[in-house]
Image (cartoon, rainbow, N blue to C red; front, side, top):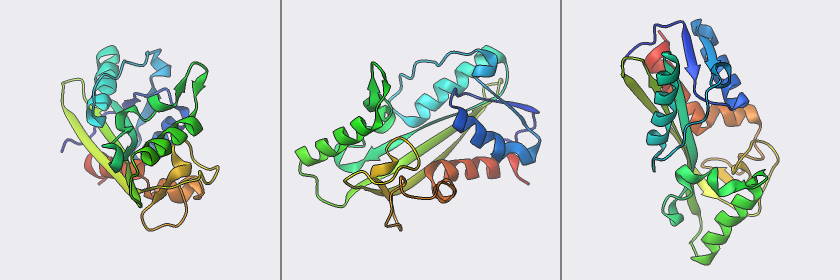
Length: 203
């Protein structure tokens, strides 16, 4: 496991919420965090069929463009009865000509489960993969997973994406109903970030 010894880390995202989360996480370690927007970087095309593959694409593109070490993530929901779909296509299922429509994506997910008569509980997991890449080509990979089930109807207005239909194991509420601080403490992304900090920053 390689320690991160640099002063500046590029978070390969245009997502302001994700950037703020990472900046807060890394603040204790004296790391200056910048983003794709700070360097006027475009979003690279994600052509892989795995979370780690797409995270690698984003991290490597940022390193190649700037010469800075870069951290990228790819995440989504994988539904067992749908063969792991939508998986890496989680955001794609929400795409419309007018932007992303996640209620539409959630309706599609449930409709497909109904169509095949998937037995309940309809198991699923939110997955997050982080890739930290250095300019010399070295990479470290961290993964986080939150198991649970897909439920219907949609419940709650907190969170984002598919949160209103995902009920994590050990809870009787969806991510959409959960206090954001609690969700951020237990989520797939929190688990991946904790592994990243322990492996490359803490101590």
